[in-house]
Amino acid sequence: MSTAYNKLFYFSFSDNLYVAKAPEVSGACCDGMTAADAYTALDDIIDLCADSCRQNRIPLYDPLKKLESTSPLVLEVASHIVKSRKSVTLLQLQDLCYYCKVWSLIWFDTPLYREEFQAWADGPVNADLFRKLQENQTVRPEELQFPHAFSDSEEWFINCILTAYGCESGDDLCAISHAARMPETGPEVTDPKRHRPPA
Image (cartoon, rainbow, N blue to C red; front, side):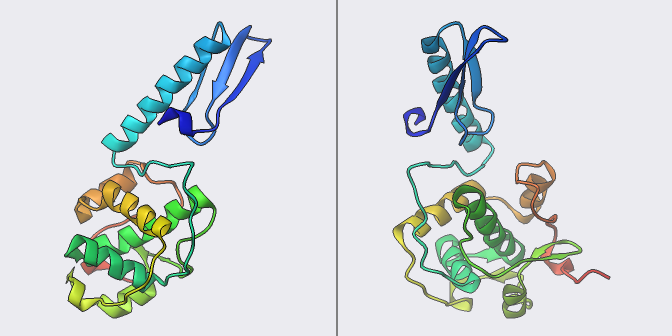
């Protein structure tokens, strides 16, 4: 795992130590008396960061992957998610689509899809999804059929998000956002039955 990431090494004259960093891995920075010491310590830190991501259900960035975009719509992404999960609540579906967009911007600097989310009083809401499914508390594949030919990298990416968040309940997804395990780039998430525009 650690060999896949870019690594930076330099000698700190102020500390009289070798410093090693992996810019793509948050928190991966260390030092050592020799370059070899710093390199070994950095490998260990990258592995620890990867374990922490898996334990906390945070998607793990793969620097070897590039997103080959086929320009899907949010409804097509949502349809793919529902088909993969068999059944999800509207709250979970809104959140999972939202997380797909957030993490695609973070990892690849490009959105998985173009449609926007609105900061409603109780969470991120995509208007297209809301209009299509507002009467559904639970969404099943037959209720959302928008097939799309995703690229291999898009399918891999969506599966990363589902691996990290797909088994979480709506309440757990809310708790994750409150625990700051998502980037601070979006609103909070709560019960889909209480979705409403800001007063």
